[in-house]
Image (cartoon, rainbow, N blue to C red; front, side, top):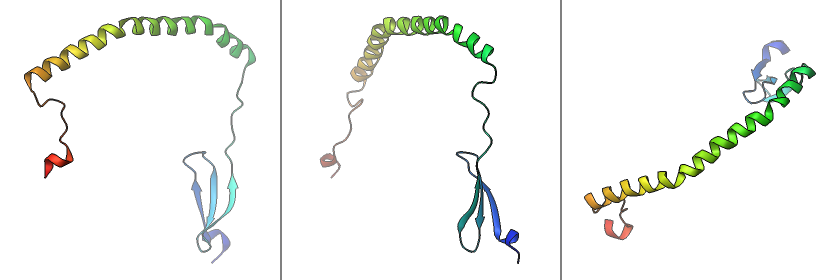
Length: 102
């Protein structure tokens, strides 16, 4: 049985590295990291992307502001609905205590 027959090639699900594991010894014999792409391929494209950031940040802020403005109304409606359910069913939302289960 040759060395190649004893090795198992496994791909790591986290980092995509290739591991060669010896079956008999149950140890990693070699480790190959995957080739990573360069973080910035085109500098001009990266600059254009950054120029659009202020508009995108403003849009996200406006959405967040509108959601926060309506938060009070949402909470009031949720409270009213839960209050209505509690009045209709007196046991609504009550958890049994351990002492009551005996």
